[in-house]
Length: 301
Ligand code: ADP
Image (cartoon, rainbow, N blue to C red; front, side, top):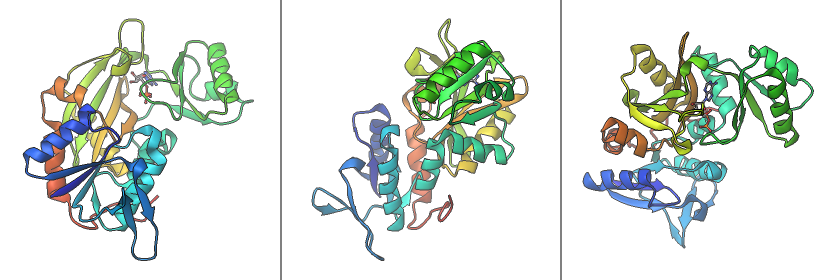
């Protein structure tokens, strides 16, 4: 197969592993920087171009689009879909997962376990907002944050209100969320590929920190997940329309709660914690599913 990996940096671990796994299986791989692509949106003959050449004949697209290029990256991805090219992550699913609120709304509609979450835009009702999610302690999150940046634990209602007002003053959209204390600073990352959890790891925050992000000094270890956790992760990926997803769960007294669903999950932590060849599993999924026009979310929002 001829595979295009949409990534801005071929040296990143996950991109490298995907290229390696594809080449090992005899596929031809081209790494494409989406920001350098330009598109021709012409009736019935949509095309994508790069450095004077038309990008055609790809059997599959593997998007690894960073959060900072979501908007343009999604448009390029959509253009490939319009051309009938199979893409591992569909544009609609990518945009759903990148918008935390939208993702939580879709998951809540289907009854997936979630931390109680409030969303707000304008100041003036921060006290009631904190009350609405059950009162302090609460976690306040920037809607557009990643890697734990913009995730704050407010231990008292007063602190929560100040943080909310500060974020709102910056005109940032925020989530206010029940703090799941019993998770003990750890979360579970389930890697879902093609409707199955193929690897899982537990991330533990360092002493004195509640955020378990590996970028914030968290440590990863192998974990055995429960049936319920497995089912929750698989459903969450399915609801968002993602054939590959990193589903983050918090272990709470009322069962697994989905915190976030990531559509470009990093492979380094999960491959080393689980010892699994996740990149290989992803390529095998592509081999089985890459057919022109095999797009599940077509026309959906
Ligand atoms: P990001 O997308 O920036 O990584 P997350 O929402 O995943 O932000 O939060 C970062 C970390 O903070 C999580 O991995 C988890 O360990 C912790 N955390 C986030 N929300 C909660 C919560 N409601 N209760 C307890 N811990 C939380």
